[in-house]
Amino acid sequence: MRWRILTLLIYFLSHYTFLHAQDYDRDLVKLYQQCTKTRLDSAHRLIVAFLRKHEVSFVRKDKIIQTPQKFRKFCDEFRAMCTRNHHKPLLRRLRIIELIDNLKHQNTTAQQASKAFEQLFEDLIEAQDYSAGLSCLLEAGLIQGHYNVSTLEALKILFFAEKFAEKHQLSNDVALQLILKTIGYYLWELDITALSTQYFQKSLETGFSSRDDSLIVLNGIGINYQKAQDFEQSNLYFEKALRYAQHIQNQVFAVVIKGNIAVNLFKTGKLDLAYSYAQQDKDMSLQNQFWENAVGAMYWLVQIELKRENFAHAKILLDSLDNAVGKTNDKRYMARKRQKEARYLYEQALKNPEKTLLAYREFVQADSLFQLYANKNKVSELKLMAEVQMYAQEMAKKDKEKQTRNGLFFGTVGCLLVLIGWLVWFFYRKGKAQKIEIQTLREQLFVQINSINQQNQDLQARITSEIKEDENEPLAYHTEAVKDEDIQQLRDFDLTQKEQWKVFKASFLRVYPAFEQELVGKVGTVSNAELRLLMLHKLGLNNNEIAKTLLISPDSVRTGKYRLYKKFGVSSAEELDKVLQ
Image (tube, rainbow, N blue to C red; front, top):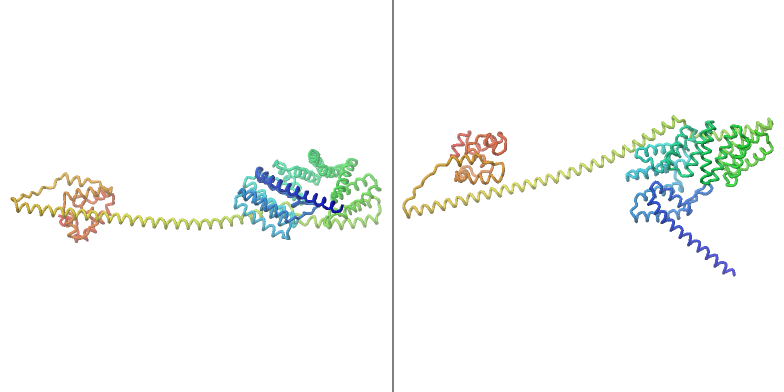
């Protein structure tokens, strides 16, 4: 019998575990699909909701329940999905969540946390994922609040995040609403109520508030007006929050808001209704073990009963208040202050001087501890804005330094590319010049070969003619005068194109067949440029006409002639003419 029961128990446990694993896998796939279909700035909330649902990372009674193995398993599986589908934006969001978990569950200091977030923020900006960068700034501010080192440090980051959202046009980003709400809450802690209300209002105007966030914001605005003794405006926002809480069926928050309304009713003399609301707040708080909230409700109930001179019930409430205070955290100085103040007011109402004095001393001591704790981060609005501006300037300086480093890097790379490009161009031009030189040498060789062939033909013709003269009657040689029209045609030749030069040279050699041969015999090899210049000079063109024909400057023509003078050993154009005859 026992074995059967044990077998059934093992079966049910294994079946439950199997079903739970199936739910987890199915919800994980569903989570990824939701994250890919919805806005990326909403992915963070979806992932956090999944982690809490499956107890991977969740809050219970003000404690974060750490399950590192489950969390690492989730991160590995979710990262694999993103990598498989090349979804880099979601991978960057996952990095933020991993960093938050690591910082909350490890023994890291606020300075280490700030440095880690700064590095992640720089990586996100480098990837130009500004929306993820804004979420990173939000979490950095919340982490500073989590460490509770300095509210001012958290506000510096959050104010910078607000300006960052404005710079990159992220007014529709979900993270901005949370940033504005958190700024309002931290300002409320610092008793800068007017500015706190302003940021709460900004948070509502974004239109992206979740249900809980909207309740918190409306309640916060009501408390700010309550601090300013504007009970009419305070009740207006409390009633809005109450109606909204009832609409979404959040009964716990509705009762908390009633407790805040009870304070306004008490201060305006409506004791019966104030008592009813405060009693509901007390009962709900005790039922849900919200000890600090229960202390606040009973504190006001004691004052209401003292006003109504119901001392017996006030004494019962005081005993319950003492019991609730004993269950709060030792650092909840507000609860102890209210406990001692309620005791002092009770003894004073009973007109017992000795007990009143003793209770007053205890109240003053508790109030001193509360003021010391509550005011350790208090700053004036002027100092706050100065600190925020200094932080913004520091971040701008870091950004400028980074841009300078990037500029130097890209400048160096650019210079190297320009240098490489110049070297490529230089060697290309050099190679092209060599090709042109080779082509020129080929043309000169071709001209010389043609000249040699022509000489051979002339020589062969002369030999043939002499043979005929010996065999037959002597031949009459007639030297024909060079026709003027042939010379004029040569003078009018267009030598701007390389192809025309060949035609011109052939035509010139028909008129003056032995011109080039005789030049070579007198001075040796003559370059194409020199031959061109000598031919045009032979045709009787002056320097300006030669320059126009060759598309060069007259100075270049004079320089070329001066070199020819030296080569031929003459000193003037007339002497050169004699040589050319």
